[in-house]
Length: 276
Image (cartoon, rainbow, N blue to C red; front, side, top):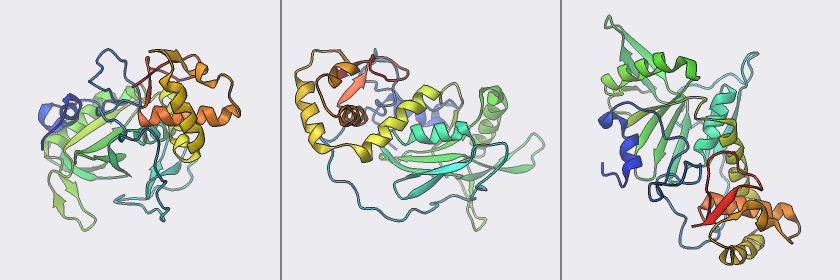
């Protein structure tokens, strides 16, 4: 598999050693720019600066998920979202944050929850099975199985992932067949990476995909062309009405990569932006 940049090589964890998923990612074309949810895999939007027609709706399904979590549980925050035509489950607040931010990654072709189921051997050679929380497939074909755990469980989880890699990331199909190399790599995401700030940003990015107004996006594009090299989010809200439409258009531009923040963290009206 040919990888186009260092981020892809970092994620190809089977070859370079076990590490954490870059979360959110970083655009290596701008090494001095802190990591943001809108600069992943050096991806840029299509040549047209404005979004095209919205895809037709089709009924979502569970995809390759090997199990369907219970809808309710007294001690955890359970639920689901939808990515394209796939139902994406979460069984905790942390998993919800992870799945939401993953959906903002550019170059994301598929996002599946509760997949894949893999096998590994313990110190005594006994074979066990583990089901990953998420599975992502990128446009370049890279497949990554994602485990979600709190930071306090990092050591034991990294040990488990090492064992899974030692077993060649061998998956177990629904029919019970062993499938070596079911993923190209594995990754761990903890609460130190899946922050509340990253989740808040992702929420607005995803909302802008379905709520943006094309006319407002055209007006904003003209304004952005006249702005200085760096400017605050709030400056784009000056002398506009209704502000809600303008705000949604700004988030849409952040999602497309037409605008990008200069610092990591929660994006608000005081955040410094620049046009790309």
